[in-house]
Length: 97
Image 1 (tube, rainbow, N blue to C red):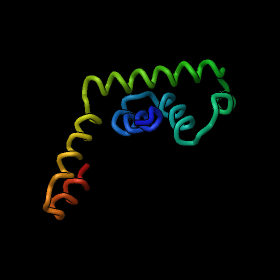
Image 2: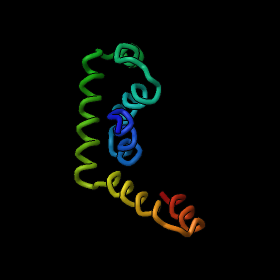
Image 3: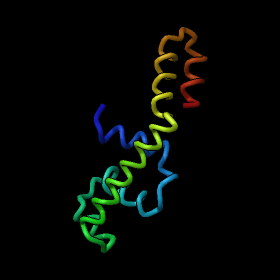
């Protein structure tokens, strides 16, 4: 899986555990496709500060996943659901995920 996509999945699960500043920087970089320079100019901090924060966010997201395994478990559930034959039940379960 693409590393960038993987991080956005982890952000969906664990983003609320980050600080507001970390969420802002992450969203600007990964969702709004701004460069480190553009983000640093918008928030009036150094490019290096943005880079360090994004690295810290990546480490935190990976640590949360290592401990809680929400993404891993979700993927396993989706594989099990794909084998189900009852389409109505399948859709209901997928809607919960």
